[in-house]
Image (cartoon, rainbow over all chains, first blue to last red; front, side, top):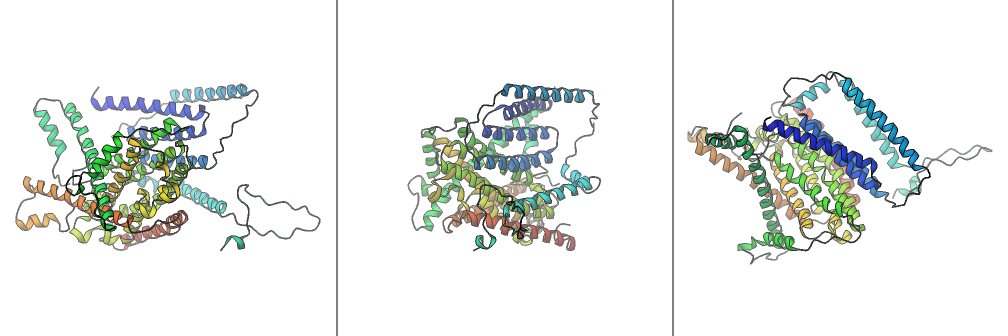
Amino acid sequence: MDLATLTQTVTFFALAGAVLFAALGVVLLDNVVYSAFLLGGVFLSISGLYILMNADFVSAAQILIYVGAVNVLILFAIMLVNKREAYTPVPGRWLRQGGAAVVSLGVFALLTKMILQTPWKISALPPTPDSIKTIGRHFFSDFLLPFELASVLLLMALIGAVVLARRELVLEPEPILGEEVVPPLELPERPREPVALSEK
Amino acid sequence: MESGIDLQGQFISALESFGLSHDLAKLLWLPLPMLMMLIVATVGVLVAVWLERKISAAVQQRIGPEYIGPLGILAPLADGLKLIFKEDVLPANSDRWLFTLGPAVVVIPVFLSYIIVPFGQNLLISNLAMGVFLWIALSSIAPIGLLMSGYASNNKYSLLGGLRAAAQSISYEIPLALAVLAVAMMSNGLSTVEIVEQQSAYGILSWNVWRQPIGFLIFWIAALAECERLPFDLPEAEEELVAGYQTEYAGMKFALFYLGAYVNLVLSALLVSVLYFGGWSFPIPLETIAHLLGIPETNPFLQIAFAVLGITMTLVKAYFFVFLAILLRWTVPRVRIDQLLDLGWKFLLPVGLVNLLLTAGLKLAFPLAFGG
């Protein structure tokens, strides 16, 4: 075993261990903040695994999107609504936990069986040094449809975020006599002001 | 590709001539550039801190550090020694683990980003194909460390500072990435070496700043905001938040934040010089000079001279921008948090998108000038 292989093996086991323990910590710890930070650890370790598989672009994108954006937003949300309330103990909690454990173990066993039974095709080709160009070429040829669909999805999310953030008062039509007035849906934390008042 | 000086190859072949195996020689080589980069980054920070003290003094018509070494050059070293010997205070009811981990999470990605900073054709740790993208990805880890230390300090100012830092960092990463994207589009690649080579054909005339003036301004503003330098130092605004997420830190942990901030500043300045000001290339193309003097390019002395000149040029350009940032810090007032976010989302982001579109259009229209 030469130096490169040895380094790869050691790094793989270290990263895989980090992924497993951090993921278990995310699920099992009681403190939400710890779980969120450990989730960042899981994402980072997975990006390390991508580097081991010569997928340098995917690993950097993993760090940028999952660690830099998703995880930071999760933390941000947790810290903005950090209420520090003690959860009331639920009677028969062990039953739920036991049920969850059984279901999870079942899924785990099924997945293991699937992984062991599938004949995986491992490419013997040397890895491309310029993975970005290969990925780009695929995006604009045979993976064009998923690529464009993803952009439509992102646009929808963008518009949704704008709609949620603006939250202007829509003037409802006068209720018809005799009909019960349904209060419009509103989010609890901010008082609704008419548009004319909120603008200076 | 022009070979230039290949230190790694020569080191390994020299060790192999002593009878070591190739693997062992490579193993001995590996830590050298990393150590070199750590030292370079730290010395760069010491110089930047000294500059900060001297320039701020000059701006305020003081003299600044004077007796600690000639011209007060040793003042940053004295700062560092003082911080090392200070007591490590852990605030009451704080979260010990997160409190300790926070500064490390902030500092490590910044040092890691030095992997891609080139000082010459082969004078960088690793010429990655992703180059600048790696820097953008790594710089997005830092807000996690800031949130961590802000949360763990058990102090409302710290928490507010951490939240502000995260919001600021997320908002300004997008214009930064868009500005870099326009440059990457022109140089057909993300590798820093490719980007510099694309600009070095006609000396100063071919530097990216002439073709990307809007992109350069966006990049510089966003980089200042990412470094939390003064017009945008909201996360540690002294008058409002004591010192933001650093409030509860003392000793070496505070020193790590301090170091990280300055390393980040020097790194941003280096990247401005790489992306927009031709990196290590001289204002007049050196090959032309060598040709005029009648010296062949393979002459070893010429190559050493070129390498030294390249490192000097990179540092001169980078420290010019460090100087600008320091001058800005001591002359401009701080913006408000809503102004900061408005500038990022409502001005820089649309302008960055337009810049990207413009670059794409120009690239199609004038493929010769815009790297078609």
